[in-house]
Figure 1 (cartoon, rainbow, N blue to C red):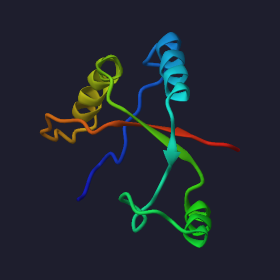
Figure 2: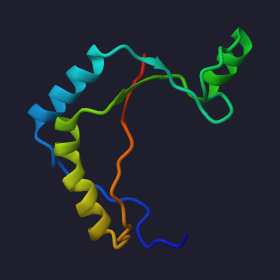
Figure 3: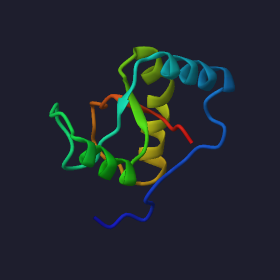
Length: 103
């Protein structure tokens, strides 16, 4: 796919208070080890697999499906889609991923 814009961002679009609320909420939820392709699913990883995975992605994640979060960010997703000239047709958003880094 040839896109003239590979990403779009907004400078200081979401108020600091909302960002702080999202971070506080994300930190309060039980996280899980982030996985990459080949390690997905519910299968248990052995020590070597965990070690290999952490070389690629050493973080934990939380999935958030809360309406109040979508209400804050989805208008920007729509606006970026339009501003960047992508004009993708979409009517569904996957869960928001909140990533926790130890380092």
